[in-house]
Image (cartoon, rainbow, N blue to C red):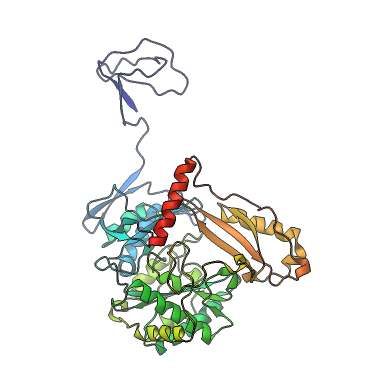
Length: 488
């Protein structure tokens, strides 16, 4: 930094402490005053940095200039992919990525220090942005609102990638109509221990069920362990109706293959592959087609045809391989916008479920209580626990809490040998500003006499988002947040 002296004079000479920032008089550039012992009142500071500017690369994209800061910053340490690699990837698949996420408000999921560092969700578009970045204002169930980014062209994708946004997280609505979704999203989420072949098996039943209800599904790998199937729908229904249709669909798939598919919301009740109907609630987003996921191999969410579902391997689709596939085959979902479907048949099924006593299912915790919704309490926390659960640990880093689980297994080998994969519940938790992981164990398959008691958490490293905040201010924030949830 450089300092100015208002009258151009220098202070009395004193020795500068080691490592101190030296001050320069602009009116006498050759006179550098030595340390005055304190910063005099008549110094005015300028934000001129003595250090060199960070490396930057300018790209011309669709007639726009996009600045890429720190282009050689490594985001994927194992694979060695950099921020510039990420930008070039999205430019290579921009046609498909814009079909999936373009024209929609997007949540920014940012990994500024790469996939091994902390990440965060940013709903509000950065105030410092190019004039050609479009935004639209959304109102959330909490009552708050935010301006979110709406990408319209490849330059916008490059700008988002420069912010280290690995994934595209669009809402299922168009920017022109924020109240009527044009997508029904079927999210196949396998519980721990479920193999990819079992996800494929459920996907086949999903396709048959869609056909029976007059719907056209467009499958894609999630980029992780699951699969997503999108249905383009007419913009004739509000969020609540689309969610009801998704719940009815999940229950129908569960009815057709109860041994492998489930619509149960609470993790401790799930088995096999969970059809997450709540992904269709307002304010929920999932990684769009072509999104790069935070995996060591930079795996991506790959659009598929139904003929590819049975033979595909999610590991084949990465930041390095997808551009060549896209160049050769084009966008596998290119015809999606021409296949808009009706939800009437699913809504009739939902109405029949209600007449038969099968009403609503739990909503996510930050939504206000809905009419007809069952108790929003985990079964294990109800007065009569349905499942015997204990908590193992909490940590900012998933690998640390997994290590704690292994220590618990070593302490209780007789109990551990009875656990099934679905008995280990790994929860991704979100606080006000940070994320953390919690692990619980369902002891339902462990003989009663071999069930360990609840122990001190190992590790116990839940982030404290309220550190340094006045207790009264924190309490007021919580009261306001609860009131907004009740008011919707």
